[in-house]
Amino acid sequence: MKVLLIGDGAREHALAEALGNSARGYRVYALSSYVNPGIKEVVDGTGGKYYVGNILSRDEMRRVISEVDPDFGVIGPEDALRWDSQRFQGGGYTRGWSG
Image (cartoon, rainbow, N blue to C red):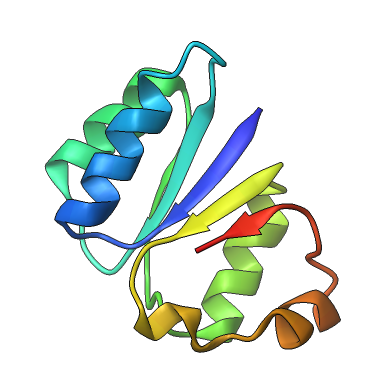
């Protein structure tokens, strides 16, 4: 199951660790504004891919979501949560997003 994690701080690192250590065998992908070594280690260890870009850009999120086609996503930073679910779903992304 593919999970897209958005964010790059300590909170997102903790989320990445939890996903990476899950018995469910998640493949973790990440979109961050810079490379967080702890998150990158989890992404690499689960066979995912690490994307660096503007985590507040709708176009950047859409591009990465389209490429990854995740089963669900986790948005860590509050600023990125300004996307309300209707606008997000309006882009065609309706599966299991959590923040």
